[in-house]
Length: 138
Image 1 (cartoon, rainbow, N blue to C red):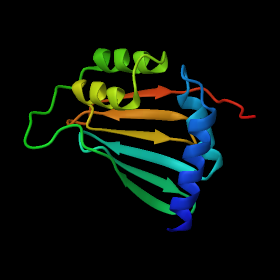
Image 2: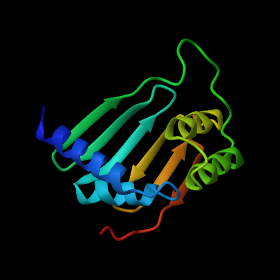
Image 3: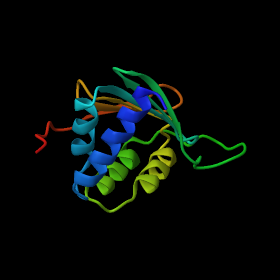
């Protein structure tokens, strides 16, 4: 296992152990940022995730949301925002959030841990940017 993978796994586990159920993303993001992760790009519906870290890039392949040929949903900002708010209030699992994002027409999203923003993209480069708050970790 590379140093980049080992560092990322350690940071992810630390973040999962300490983040609150409601509004936990900023805690996860800050833990990863402090571990040297600068970006995380998710591709939907394949559930591939590229982490850009100071130790090197790491690709993670999760179970895809769908398989086979499918139509890409139209990008719907309001549906996406509803999915975000449900996730932020602890009403969905991460997998449910990914599926809701895909259903809102998101084909990828890019987390910038330095700027503390997440940009969600549709197939035609439509996008929605949301900032998340800085948190202090204990």
